[in-house]
Figure 1 (cartoon, rainbow, N blue to C red):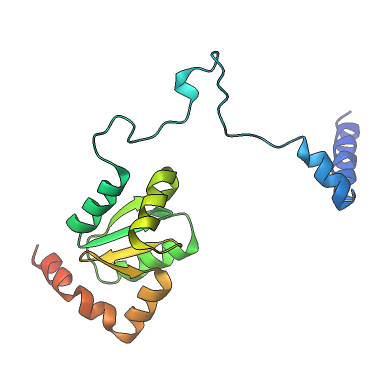
Figure 2: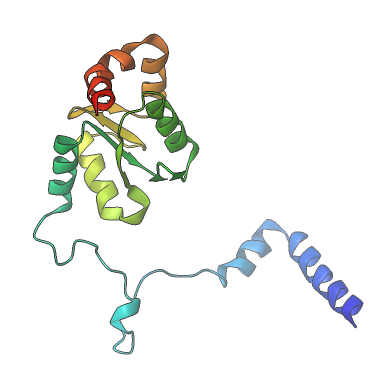
Length: 166
């Protein structure tokens, strides 16, 4: 019985593998999901997407400005420093951690509005984005290059000194 079920399952999988590209897209088209919420009175509010700042008196743009102003090193990344969610974010964290300084960060994957606000603020399309002492520096490739040629050490020296004195 188990063998016949596994054979049936295997045949089903192999048949979808052998489909032509056109028929596969037709087959998969029916499997697409939507993340939009219909205007259905039966849809409960608990299941609707929420804007994290919906009831806040502060805009996302204001949050970005405040983050950059208040934190000597601000990192907007995919994931967080403990668990980066992309290689570029991981690289940025590793480079910055070499200096043993506090790193403030926000996960742009948690809030699409935050991601757009950071892009508008920096006029830079990709992530991660690193700000040091209020200045937009760039992404992981830029700080890696700065680290390798000594520029990053110079830019962070007063932050390193403050961190060591604590």
